[in-house]
Image 1 (cartoon, protein in one colour):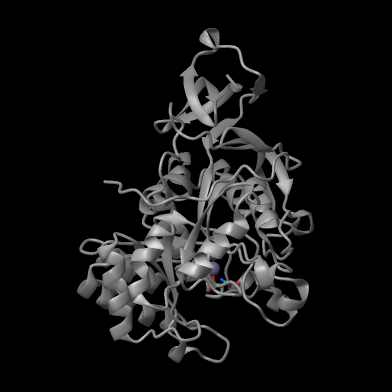
Image 2 (cartoon, rainbow, N blue to C red):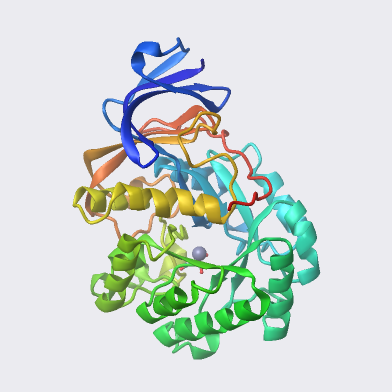
Length: 420
Ligand code: NCD
Ligand code: ZN
């Protein structure tokens, strides 16, 4: 055996169980009680902490290329594993943007051997006819920014229907940033702009039957429309930690601007309640790192990879959310919805992507200490109960609670699988 993890409370089939985990060749090879454990090169004492499947973030901006001054593959995936994530899905609004097969291939090449955690790549297609090939090139999903189309990207109903039909044909998933730019009120992205955009996409989903994922839903009404239409359509949605926990009363400067913006208390509470009840399928970080200067100039977004899990564990400690729900929204639903193979469970034969969490260890969030280059977070200074003590990717410790130990253990996610 390469490694044993002993003395943990291990998340198996919806419970915390006293089990030892043996890892060999990057896989979980055996779950057993401590008396029957085989010898291993390395033993980790989990010290009665929680051993959980590694977290999965379906919405991260790892940047790199011309945006390397904001973040690059190395710093972004270091931030991921320090925050307990073992798999992240990377967004295509890079420079150059990922809008075709060539750019998708280039991006994967750039990432190879340079990532601490597993990464899947979105593409924002310009041409519907590229989608067959994009699937072969391992696009994990497709992303459309309704409010900010890329150059030459035609987002008319006619072309969106073409794109959606092709995605449906290829059994893919289309992630939608739902804001209608015609309804923007200056720089303030109105509630109405989100609602209208969600309605529009739902109408198109009715025509095309395309599988849709609405990213960072921020309004009660938008969410209600999604909930109502889930019965007949193949749609899901995510919430960010900031729209779940914070509202306009918490904003004190433009540093705290993001898109969609933080909403009022009523909208925020409805997002929180829906996360708790499981009406929102996933929590995603929308990790959007920027330089100090970019934030001064009004660029939207926050670094989210290093705060999301501690903030959610803190909610669990305060009895606001169950561990089961945390598993659903931050591991299993992302895995299932995006068809990620052989990860997300502590089970023999599965890839050894694990995280050890001390739910009692308090920390004060300190954005200046982030591994991410983006040091901006509205959670800066917040005291939370919950710390990551170790992160294991493909069978190797990559983060030991303080430092990054290995910086190249991540895999590029291959083609999707079908889950029932
Ligand atoms: C994102 C970014 O900076 O790339 N910013 C944000 O506020 N969410 C863009 C996005 O996800 O829409
Ligand atoms: Zn985003």
